[in-house]
Length: 361
Ligand SMILES: O=C(O)CCC(=O)C(=O)O
Ligand SMILES: [Fe+2]
Image (cartoon, rainbow, N blue to C red):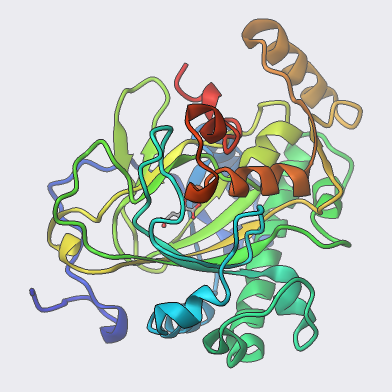
């Protein structure tokens, strides 16, 4: 095995190769966003309305992120039998452990190549009370020293970014923030490990093509492997991890709330390129999702801009932003029908989908 060359020895890998095509992202400076810088807010708006992905620098969460990777590594090192005591299950619950191969990655039912631990924001913040479920000892041992600080910081970063979108969408102040606070929600953090897959072929993914289920994802990648499907092209393109930069992306709830003005882009995870492919791949996400009772629909009554966009999308593309679904139901349905145990064929797979169908047109 090649000698790792990166900075932090515990999470050291060969560099991302420089001969692999990558898709560039705008770099948003979180310190400037917090300071109310108009040019930076415009940049964020541009990223959110085009690809729905951007890099975020100066987020000041690196220490919390490193702690979370250590928690993830300790958790994945537990015996499988112990991890399975905290399994997500097959009924649509997301919090807990997911073993390799428990989810399908496409409509043929092909199995995934990632294991992960999801910790609900509600449990992290309620600790030592239990809001939703219990977790492995490697999680609970650092719930207050690592998980809670990471969740608190990530949630505030995401809400601050949402405030910018809120204002640009012409929504009354705090509208989006209120939809994500004040009740239990599907917000959660996820640490993902994906082992090397030497026999990998381009057609399959380690984590299947999807749009994110919630509103805003704050992602930390140690290695490459994340790919986006760029509208107007027919190719998957790598996003290159940049040290100190998170990758943020919008999820379906924001696309729906905004009547299609904001973009929830299709993405997937494949084995890292080049020499990185020989190592386990690690990533960490914090997903902000709307409160459980929030109905997913375009906020037409609250913004003229959204009303016009939703009507235009309906007229021109037949897109309906009235899902008739609460965030909790939307989320549970999608989780449930990704599970291989619930796979019955392309129809059941379709139940795991959100706004993906809009992506390939
Ligand atoms: O691991 C990654 O880079 C992305 C993970 C992801 O897209 C997800 O968990 O929704
Ligand atoms: Fe994702």
